[in-house]
Length: 330
Image 1 (cartoon, helix red, strand yellow):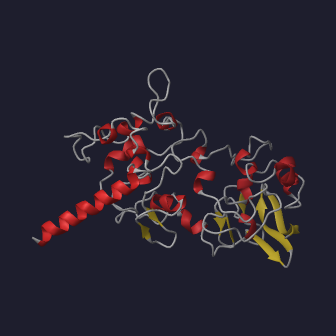
Image 2 (tube, rainbow, N blue to C red):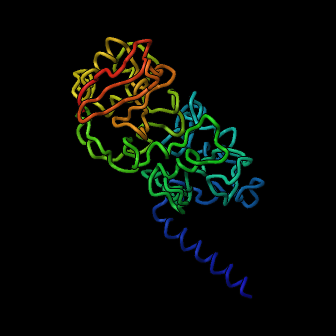
Image 3 (cartoon, rainbow, N blue to C red):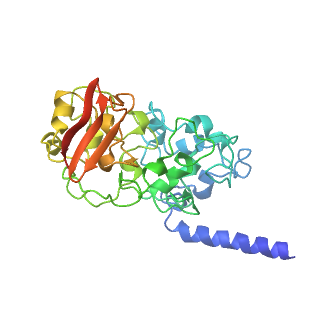
């Protein structure tokens, strides 16, 4: 008897939640989805799904993709096309491993790593202007959330301390930790205020999707704009990602660092050679040298040192020795 009462209360509570969201959520709006629930669900449905008409992501592409003539079917974004780009999340290959009610991060290294539309989106709750609304999250402090409070909490489910993540895949939450010497302001406004920032950016927080396109991109790491990681000629297109927030004319005028122009323009040094775009645990200004280019110097150190307002480098870069070389004032 108690079991029946519990089940009845649970079902009613879920119906109440769905009704509350139905007035807002895009998929529950019959003006947007003409067939209502039956657009996605069927009386029988696909095996191992909540009676879905097709498996995810094929079901999603039926609306979030173009028809054979190239026109969008129902949704305003062609996710199918984005998922055909060179750099993308492997949804097509691994979504079948998703299980209803699963929790992320996974608990065991043996758990199959995967990504599904349903890991980032909650179809009954999501909105056109808030597509990740209702998705679960995982905070930088390791707390699981029924509903993520910001984009990074969704990303941390796979890109933080996951036991089954690839060896070469970093724990991004460590880079964004506010206790670090410097970081891009994902979790908290930056400790520093670069004079190169575009209007409105100083003191503001950003999200992972300001730099990354989760569905797919033409650029490595699913970046929103080009960011050349190898040395070469400076141009607006080479560092388009950086220049979307940092004024190019300010950088090249040495307003934030007195040797930017020399390094970037005359020596063709990439931003990545000296900076970690996510954050630096030990240095200000996101300074974290790329070990593929920068090596320890004669002193055995590979170090950026700040003494008062004076900053110096102890390292070997492109076979050039920097032993206590002053590189400017902070």
